[in-house]
Length: 334
Ligand code: AHM
Ligand code: MG
Image (cartoon, rainbow, N blue to C red; front, side, top):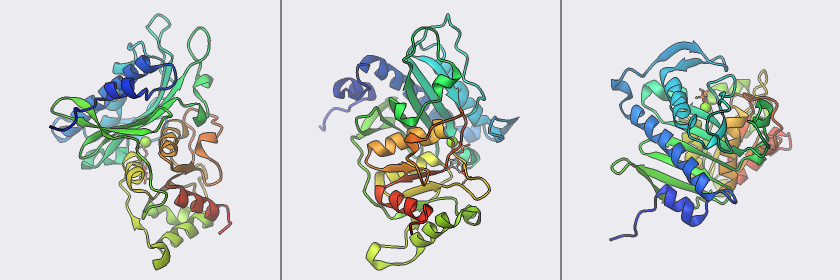
C-alpha cells in the first residue's frame, strides 16, 4: 500500500500553505474554489449533450460574444461565493462592475477577481479550458471595499491560482509559499495532491503565441520570434510551437516543462489582449512562485499600476531565461 492520499484541505491545514494568520479561513476559501471547479468540470464533461454549447447572444464588457458556458461558469462562481461568508467583494471578466454584496449578507475578508472560463474559443470544440482566480484581502475598516479598493497591484495578492479542465481537472495555487498542484479524482470527488512544490525549469524548448498576429507585432517582438525559430545546435533551437488557445493550459505546460508564452502588444494595440487583474496577475504570481518570470516586455507584471478593473496588458510569461531574452529583444538591446 502506498502513502495515504493528501486532500487539498489536509494539505493547507498541515503544511500551513496559507497566507500568514489565516489557515482555516483560507482552507475554506480554497475548498469553495475547488467546488466551483467541480461544478464547472461536471458540466464540461457532458457539454455536447446538454445544450450548453454556442453563444447566448449577449456581448460582454470586453466587446466579446458571451458563450453559454462563460455565463454558466460565472453564475457558478456567484452561487458558490455570494452567501459563503468568505468574501467581501467579487469581480469577474464577465461583469462590467464588481458584484454588489448587500451589507446584511455574511462577509469575509477576501476579495476574488476571476476569469470564470478562460479560453472561450475552445468551448465548442472540446479543447482545454480554465478558470483563473486572484485573491486579495481587504484590510479596510468597516463596510465593504469600494471598486477602487479592488484595483490593486499584483504584489498585493495574497494567493492566486487556476483550475484547468483538460484530460484531468487540476487545481494549481500559491499562497506565497510555493506552488502546489492537485488533481481531481472524480471517483471520490476530492482534489488530491499530485504536484507538490512545482519548480519551473530555468529554460525550455517550447514557445506559445498566436503567430497569426506576427505582422501586427512591433519589430522587437518579431525579431524574438525569428530568433526562437532559427536553427542553432549550440542553444538547442529551433523551439517547438505549442498553442492551445487557452492561456491556462499553455501556461500550465510551461510551468511544468519550461518555455515561454507571449500575448504581446501590437503596433496598433499596444495594451495587448489579456486582462491584468484576473489573468496576468494571478498567473504571474504562480509562475514567479515556481521560479519563473512574468513581464510586459519592459516591466514586471506584478508591478504594473492598474487603472481599471478590465485593463489589458501585454503578457510574456514563463522560464526566466526566455522571458529575460524576450525583454532584451523588445527593449531593442538585441
Ligand atoms: P478569454 O478569457 O475571453 O477566453 O480570452 C483569453 C484567451 C486566452 O486563454 C488565450 O491565450 C487567448 O485569449 C487566445 O486569444 P487568440 O484567439 O487571439 O489567440
Ligand atoms: Mg481568459
